[in-house]
Length: 264
Ligand SMILES: C[S@@+](CC[C@H](N)C(=O)[O-])C[C@H]1O[C@@H](n2cnc3c(N)ncnc32)[C@H](O)[C@@H]1O
Image (cartoon, rainbow, N blue to C red; front, top):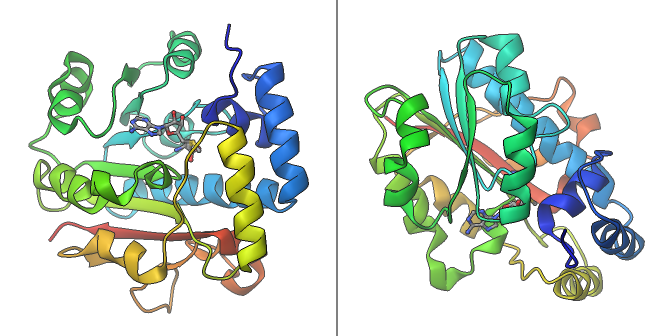
């Protein structure tokens, strides 16, 4: 049992899931009080993950996914999207949090083509060479690399840009990377400060990034147009793949940038 709030549990609660503790719920309620659009924001991110996985599978034929910093695979996660779009699809969920991984083991026990791996995503070699990864992912074939709402936990000293490059280097041309990450670009300093102190109380140190910092994740890659008629650019998370990008860009959406890019 966990007596400290945990990012995946907080996130699960905000998304209406049930795999969370009383401590997670208390921390989430405090965060929601400080930032009421956190719920919208979490759903906008989840929608991005779902649309990105569906598009990679349907349009670009990607069949295998590494979901890095996966959290709990509740509320229509990668394996559920794959079940609808390519039943032969495979996913390895990677998270460093022991409680999250323990829950994931139970949730995924009877799910073919999905596994969970306890690892720190900064240990790229460990993630890529793990037996569970090797069983499900063939690194000779295109891979969908998902880093959804996780790079904020990697400070600049961890060089998250270099981390993305290392994963990309390990997969073949025709692979895709989907990233979403929080930004304070559209918010007032006061709101960003409130959120930061709530996160710190919950034991999570999170970094928000500017558009320029976020865009650098995709250096050397071909960013895809986020929706029909768009230029190949970074957008707010709700806009990516949205049927009506203007309507989808609500207050929650503006807390996160998102983009998907192809390895040429
Ligand atoms: C906010 S949740 C996002 C979950 C999921 N990607 C989503 O969008 O629904 C972030 C997750 O990343 C995990 N995490 C943070 N830093 C990590 C690291 N260095 N290695 C592995 N997992 C990490 C946390 O444990 C947490 O479960």
